[in-house]
Image 1: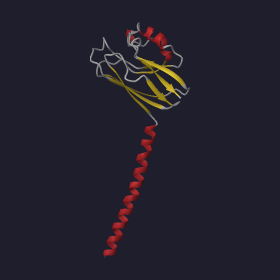
Image 2: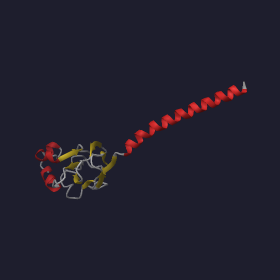
Image 3: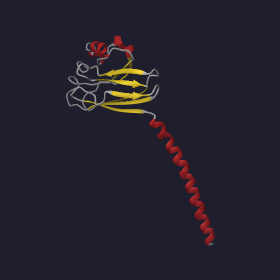
Image 4: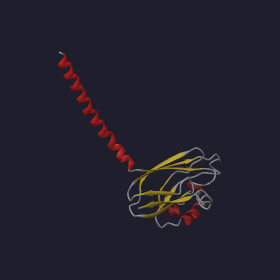
Length: 162
């Protein structure tokens, strides 16, 4: 009887260990996939600056950008967005065109083909999130806030794909 109980205990232990091995393998696969995503937490406040001005990614890599307006000024006076532009686009020319595009949240229709992706225009304490694939062509892709005067005060950066 004692040997039967020992055998049963040993068998249960082996089954439990085998089950743990399977769970560990399946749990590590999504973690490995998740690590291939570039996750960027951008903030922007009343100082008209992003907390980061450089993002790096590999060609075609998944990118997740979260922008949070941490400022306190009203949206009409101090809104923020994140606009990623095509390689070779002049960000100053884009910002200049955006000044007259208040009706479309400072996204100029005449330059829509220059945009890879953009957030909505955010008021204080608002967040928007983007999920996209990095361009497949290596190079530098400018990003900026198109709210009037923000680009000129330094609210800009670059996505480097390499």
